Length: 309
Length: 179
Image 1 (cartoon, helix red, strand yellow):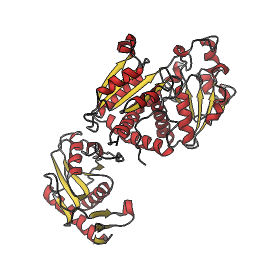
Image 2: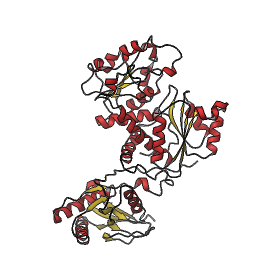
Image 3: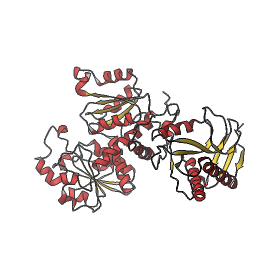
Image 4: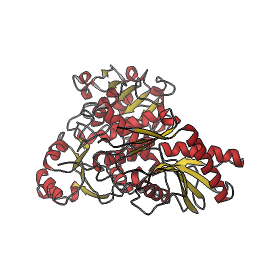
């Protein structure tokens, strides 16, 4: 299986073969980060621009480290220090960045579809690092890799995603990714945070959290995105935590060998209790480690080969 | 396309056995040796060489794999990316004598990439190159220390090494170019 794709905009339009190629390539790249000299010359002379219109520590750092471990030059632009605050449009920003001949632009933006639009303006690769409530493909890939590594498979795995499904690009990308590879996905959250018609994506909507997690092999807790909420979707953080937070009590209703994922950053005591987040079932830090490998695989497969233009 | 079998199972076995003896003779035993193969077939050949040397010397020589893919010089000009293989360096290679193993020595570019990869893991005492087939047409100043068989070819011909572990059969084929 090969890919001739220019961009990585989402999981929705990837084939099963492409997802599997990305995962197996990422597995190989894990070894590079385990070396004493964590660098390979593969993308020497390539330039990657990280264009982040939203705050990020993990994802931006992960993309930057991935690029640097492959010898590409990584440049970070965050919105606070960019010309966007002076009123430059995204299109102008894109054209100007393109004029500096980068090989890839990694973009995060609060509006769904921005990476897709950007990809039409520029000839270089565009990688979606999260766009609004649409998709976050590299997150889904690292979640897939983490589960595959631990359970040895994706097919037949039962995944429960709990939290703010409506605002979550992580949920959307993971529903696409896991269902494509043959897992069954159940989602649960407060009724105000459950988008109507979510079943159309191929998942099951559970009535409550206990129902969602009772048979799950994997529980994915979503972050409550306070910054994305202009109205109140739940009365209080305490009530949310009581009904939809994962703590030791709720965990007892789940399978004994369940594994727990969280995309970070964790709101401790809201969607997940500290003892669970740091407990033996949690793979939160494995996810972060795998994030670098997955992003190296993305760069390798999109940037390495020549493309006829 | 015409295909000639230039080495059969017996010939491959004899060649590997001779190479194993040459390695032992030149290195005065198996001390400090590490055998690393270039995947996929070079790695299987490396494991076979290890087994033969261990049987003769009563040693347990570390064996592993060096994937040269990330160090190739043609990544930017290829149309699609080659699939990554396994990198498996079992122990520190500092001050070790490395036997690098591949199936076919052709332009020498893979060996260059493999040596660059190795250097990122440490400073070996020496690197010696063992190949089952040397088909000529070098593009870099690289020479094998141990050769199973020299097979003069034209650039247009293809040399295929097929071995049991990956192809179900042990043989070396030369395929003439289609006219």
